[in-house]
Length: 148
Image (cartoon, rainbow, N blue to C red):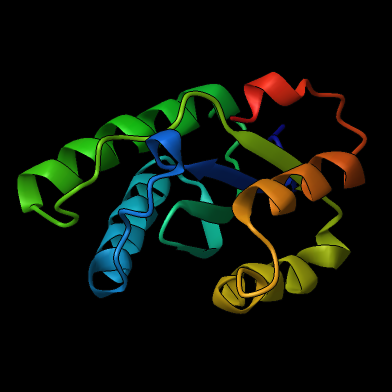
């Protein structure tokens, strides 16, 4: 018997101290690198996007991969890649923690569009405002002091 799953995640995390260090000119290179990490772990990437201080990843997790280990691997490997390839001059690492939100597969296109339009969303709302909205929408209790 095989294992069949369809778990659609939106994973969100920011740069350390929400520093605006992910400049436009190398973001696509970073996204391609992260896609490679996901691909190597048999996870299907639907969309990755973000702005200068955070990224969103819409992906399906392979049943053999835990969410926590995936995010840890993405952060560690991408930090090393950013530094060795000199992608973002002032990048100091990723924040501790992350947000991960599940969606019904029927909502996939909506989530993809949301991530695709990050530049537009952040003309209206900050990352903090967006993150709090996501936490509320998913019924996640949180403490303000941990949101920076």
